[in-house]
Length: 194
Image (cartoon, one colour):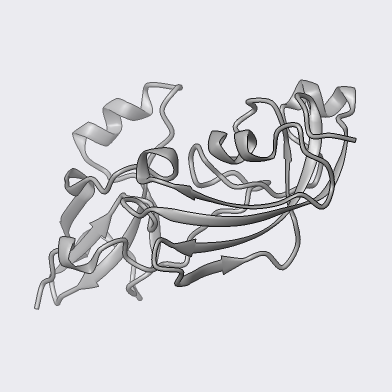
């Protein structure tokens, strides 16, 4: 069976940066509902569309095709007293307790940002709301491992049952594989407190 709209696709993959530094290699396949359901990046769907099991390809995604450009506006320095202890670099928090965040919580269409602690000082915390891979060109090596027709339930839900896909929307869906190695997208773009 060929990959086409409303099929469930299983892909083995390896993700590297543009210099071929390994970011992630699949232990199991990435499984998604093909045809614009946001289960993976559109460029990945384009690359495998119309192909059979065993098809292998490598594609490069620029930041605007993957996790977006790095946005320095998403860096925040907050008082350490606002956070629970123990506090460590790499910890993540959903949203911030400020007026801007409170306003966005009223909008059901917007998911709250996930902020990662990137630096600590005695009384300050640096938080970054960018995805760890924001601003990076990424290379995906892909092999189609399986293709099958989606069930009615999967079509209604917009995703396969019990499967993992690349999270291209919000970074916090439980069924999605969140590519997050905790590494900063660009250390020179992050403020430090030392």
